[in-house]
Image 1 (spheres, rainbow, N blue to C red):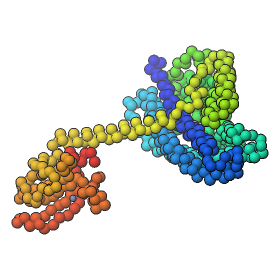
Image 2 (cartoon, rainbow, N blue to C red):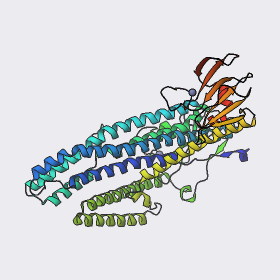
Image 3 (cartoon, rainbow, N blue to C red):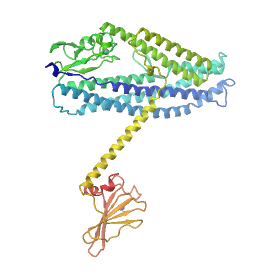
Image 4 (cartoon, rainbow, N blue to C red):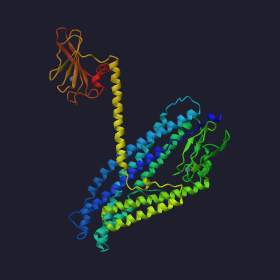
Amino acid sequence: MKDKKKPIKLNDQQLMLDASRVADIYHQMTIDLFDQVVDRVRERGSASLEDNPYIWQLEKMSEMGLLNKDNTKLIARYSGIAEEQLRYVIENEGYKVYKDTKSQLLEALGGNGNFITNNLIQTNLANYVNQTTGDIDNLINTTLPKSVRKVYQDIVEEAVAKVVTGLMNPDKAISTTVMKWAERGFYGFTDKGGKRWRADAYARTIIKTTSWRVYREARKAPADELGIDTFYYSMKPAAREMCAPLQHQIVTTGQARVEEGEKIFSLDDYGYGKPGGCQGINCGHTMMPFIPGANYKPDLPEHLANLTPEEAIENANAQSKQRAIERSIRQSKELLHVAEKLGDQDLIDKYKSKVRIQQGAMRDYLKQHPFLHRDYAREKYYADPFSKAKKEVKLREEQKKARELATKRAELDKAVKSGKIVSVSGVTVGHTPPGKAGEPNSVVQHNATNGDVLGRTYYDDRGYKVKDIHFTNHKQPDKHLYGKKGEHVHDFVFDDDGKFISRTTRELTNNEREENLDILWRY
Ligand SMILES: [Zn+2]
Ligand SMILES: [Zn+2]
């Protein structure tokens, strides 16, 4: 029996990784917004801060509208791409996690892979996207521009105060004030505990919280559907106190018990869902549905196999210290960038040496904790996630267009093979369309001199025109509100003597569309 058991496959955490890249775009946006503030403050006008500080201040304040215009443009550019990416990540990666998990469960249950899609999960994912983008929109489009204006105003006023009181020369006054605000960042949100969040850090929190919720729900939904309440708790080299005993164990959302000789831990005994408990904020452990008796646990790599819960807790502390050093390196590099923009050599030297010292501290720290590894990407100042995302969005659009074109072409191929396309007996080219009389039961095509097909004229068994199918709107879009690009039909009635009786206009029937698909397939 035992060899029939299936190992559970842990699908990777692409979703979390991609979501974090979206958060990177918002961070990049605030760096670029700050650059715009610095440029505006430093731009030379008619008044100088040295000779006419108050006139300089007035002039700078009157430029607030220009700054705001630049900000708005930049924010629109970034947030359009970021939102598009977030939607894609949550809806597609989220659904993929759900689908993979469910397929594995069905396989373990010995089902013949009769996978039924669940529309509810797709609706839920779409709702998560809307809720999240709503929260972020408010932050990015309302709070952030206000914060930028406030920072600009404060920099200008403080710089003037420092010059007027004779405390500093104008250049130093500007660079000192700018650096102070660069360190603070743009205000975004104050939480219940009174903690003041930077706008980009708050956006990251919103994105992270949502993507974890999506990830967990996509994992748990298949288990709920199939009546399974047992899960494999993932193993990491670092784990908080409430998580450490659960690592590499089977857990349940129900009662603690023993099943198929497997001890099952109840999540409720470990602070399930509470901020510091298992599956709480920043926990990072994943739960994979697991059927005792039908699944077996994955093999652990050597560095994890003999890890005790105590060691895991210790490692967690060591890892969070590494994250802190990484953050301080990134921060110093960003401040170095601002110093370079200001062209202040003292400040450039200061932050350069700060970066060197922090990198040295990182090297020493990693030597003491060999299980940690250096991740240079986390220490990087500027990796331009925006341009990368933009390329990805464009590529997806192109792929979508190509798929649509291929579908249309396949439809055309089918119509051609089935012999449904009308056979044309002649073509007239130029201004004059086919006349009212022609070969009985024939179809004559009308082409423009550039080769565009303008229409087809159908003749009845007497040889009189019964209809014109026009493929254009005759360049009068408002008068031809037909079809996809204005295509329409004129029905004609002539008596047996060829006397005109009537002409009416209408939409093409499905049958007419099909027999003219050789023209219409591109529409
Ligand atoms: Zn955890
Ligand atoms: Zn017409």
